Structures are given as C-alpha cells and as structure tokens.
Image 1 (spheres, rainbow, N blue to C red):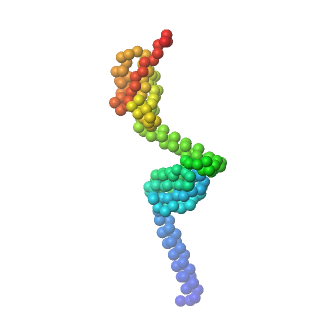
Image 2: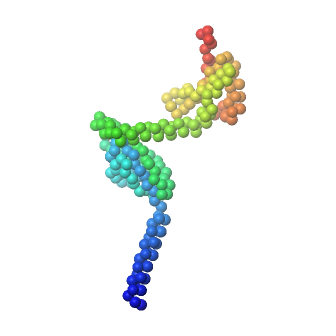
Image 3: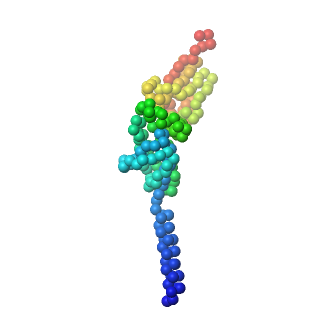
Length: 207
C-alpha cells in the first residue's frame, strides 16, 4: 500500500468518524430555556438541584420533559414555575420576583426589568382567564339577554374571598322566572346544577 493510499484511507476514516459523531450528537435529546428575569440577576435551580447564577436573557440547556424552575435572590420572595419543554424546543421562561425591601424595588426599575414584569403579569392574567373559561364554560356565551331577565357572571356568594370562584347573577324583572332561566341555560347545552346561580330582582322604572 502506497503512502498516498494510506493518507486517503486515514482521511476517509476521520471523515467517517466525524459524520458518526455528528449523527450521534443530533440524536441526543436536548432542549433550551430562555430566561426573562426581573430582577435581572439571581439564582436558578432546576428540579431542586444546585443553584447557579443567571442573568436576564440567558439561555440554559435542559433535558426534554417536565421541570420545576426556581428563581431566587436576596431581598425578594422566591418563585417556582413548572414547565414542559419538548425535544429541540427553546422555551421562554418569564419570572418576576416580589421585592421585600426598598433596595430590592430599585432593582426592578430598569427598562428591561419593567418589560419582564409587564409580560409576567400579562402571562398570569391570561392563564387565570383560561382557567376560568375551563372551569366555567358557560362564560363563552354570556351575557344571556332575554326579554324578562339577563344572566351575567359575578362574584360567588359562597366563596366571596376567592376571585377564581364565579356565580351566574340573574337579574329578573318579575318573580317566578327561575324555571324559565334553568330551561334556557339547559337549552344552550349547559347544566344549571354545575353553577352557583343568584337571582336578583331588577328595580322597576318607578323605583
């Protein structure tokens, strides 16, 4: 075998090895989380592991699946968030901490921190709305406006201090309309027994 042939074989083996490594690397499950943090620096622990120092807009590699991400910093309440990230997905994790001191509040006044706070609050409101629609599917058709009554969502009388609990407030123009309201709700595909229903008499025009 000539020296030239040995070089060609050796070079071919190197190329084949690199291709094999590349294929194996591409098959390894991996995902990434992108951090949006306020304050902009702190400590992250994943699934109860050791803390690591992180900054806003930093990315971290994680295995695909479910994880619990905890963000903390001195003089702030810590916050934990459950996430699910798919293979090869980059998932943004938005966390804004509650400050406990005046010095901590100052750390949240930067433009980037304020943007994270707004997005964090918006995300929580969206999730709360989605959960309400899931718990109270009739919300999608409210208000119900009939000739003698109107049905609107309202705060639960049974759980007055819980904003996640709703009732159906029915303003009726005269007594004795309850059966008609129940029948109307049933005809729209909802079970009245699934809801707390509060009947209220509407004031007459002369009151």
